[in-house]
Length: 309
Ligand code: SF4
Image (cartoon, rainbow, N blue to C red; front, side, top):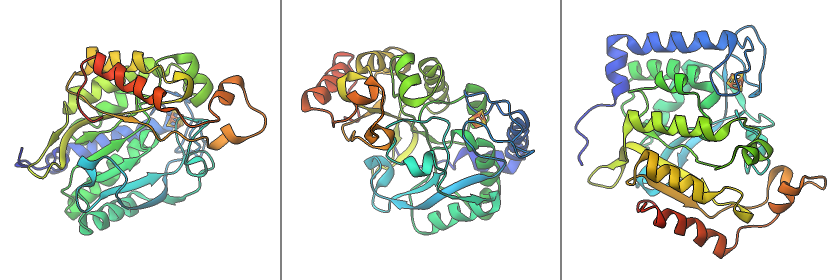
């Protein structure tokens, strides 16, 4: 499919609705329910909740990235902006210093808009917000600013899937491509390994809302993503991700045409490598086996999923 329409955020910007959405989103920061942790802290007044991020976003780095999925990378890379802090605490996080030790710097909405413009000028096919769930208000504010500066590439929302539906509704027609994780099939595992209460219900509701907004993945004549959803599923040792439950959910409640990246790159990292650990963390002390990966792929095929893996 050829790109023949401008990103929706430009239309919203021109009508003034994007500024209204930004204002509504920023109001959430005063009694924060931006994500499912529902901390109810006053981030505007200087309080911090689970994500340890205040009224300003924190960035760890930004630049063209060539390690993302091929439809995002193309020839010129995906313009990733890595946010510090996170609304989950995955014990095996490979970016532990960024997500949990907040290795980053405060960034204003103007600076964030400037970063987007520089990535577009470098030829990146999209702007890819990595770990955005706790900074949606700051992102909407910055996109409104960047739209007035000439931003025109698609926006990618690259989250852990632990997203609040009411917050996602503020992103309707702002985000072009959603790329959530579908990490777990069971809440007890999600709580132990990622400190995300009620993960499966929130993730499933979030993916349904994302899919309602953008549909299945659509690419242009150069196979670059224009719009739609890419779902990531990281295979864990001992099938701790419960891949059969996740694949059945995607097939039956999202779409059998979903683009699903079944990821094999799990390696022990973060707290998994510490001496004192729970039995579940002990199971995570090794990479996955070939059989464990093939099992996840088989689950996808048995549910007649067919794209992305
Ligand atoms: S965004 Fe941060 S402060 Fe707000 S509810 Fe989520 S974790 Fe808590």
